[in-house]
Image (cartoon, rainbow, N blue to C red; front, side, top):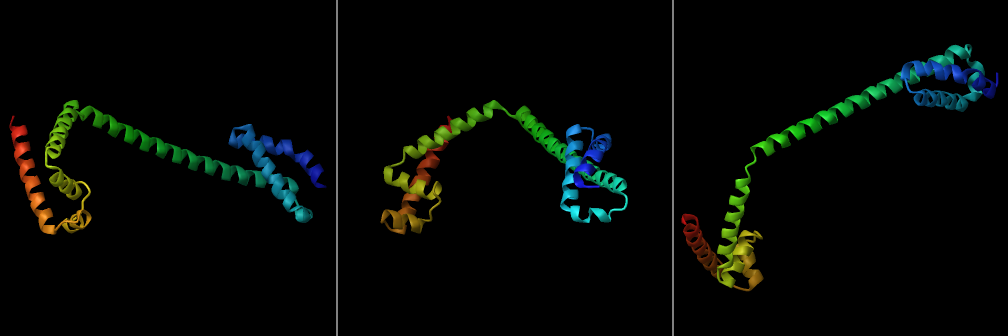
Length: 174
C-alpha cells in the first residue's frame, strides 16, 4: 500500500480514535497529522511493518498519551501560577487593610521638616552634608571633590549635624 492510499484509508479513523482521548477535534487532527508526518519520514521502511493498522493505532495512542501528559503539566503550571497570584493578592489585601493613611501624612510632614532643616543650613555646610549623607561619599572623597581639607569637611559635618539636631528638636517639640 502506497502512502497516499494509506493516508486516505486511515486518516479519518485515526482522527476519530484520537478524539476519544483528547476531546478537541483540532488536537486529534494535529496528532494524526504528526503521526503521518513521522510515517512519511520513515516511508522507506514502511514495507517492514507487518500490521499497519495496529502500528498506526499504537502511534496515535502514544501521541495521545504524550499530549495528555503535556496538558496535565500545563494545567498544574497554570494552577501554581493561579495559586501564587491568589497568595500575592491576599497579601496585598492584608497590607491594604492594615495600611493607615495617617502614616503617609506623618511621614510627609517629617520629610518636609527634615528637608527644610537641611535647606536652612549654610550653603557650604549643606553641600558637604548632602555629599556625605545623600551621596554616601567619604570625608576624603568630599575633600578631594570640593578641594578642601578633610579637617574642614569634619568641622562642617559637625556644624551641620548640630544645627539639624537643634532645629529638628525644636520642630518636633512644637
